[in-house]
Image (cartoon, rainbow, N blue to C red; front, side):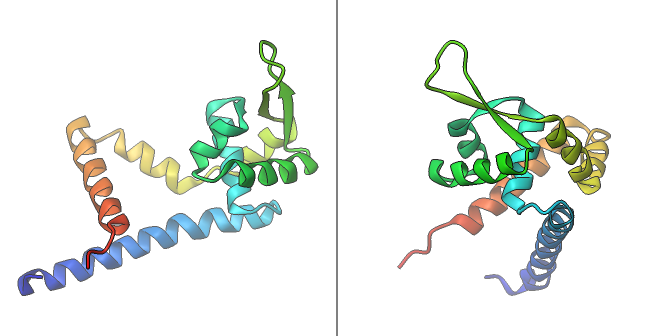
Length: 149
């Protein structure tokens, strides 16, 4: 590591940590207020954004195993926030949909930080947004990078 960069690297790491905290704390508070886990919160948001999905599609979007998504869906179904609807053209597949109660909860779960970021990003030139997105993806790849021996 080049010494001249140490201060800037530390500032960047602190900024990333603050971003992670902000992105975690607010949804956690909203989830707890609705007696939901963060995973359940995310499923509700994914369904609101995408409409009905199969459990396999949900598991891919949430980055969890199919067996984990089944448990999450079961608990949301018990809370009457989602329902399983058999797919018309393939009766082996069930689509997961938000109930009216689930739609109401989703409105409560809306994250004002996400809305604010989205609204402000729309004010920036598309090329700059792509640069920011690329930088974030690069940071994520640095975090996920496998250590070498």
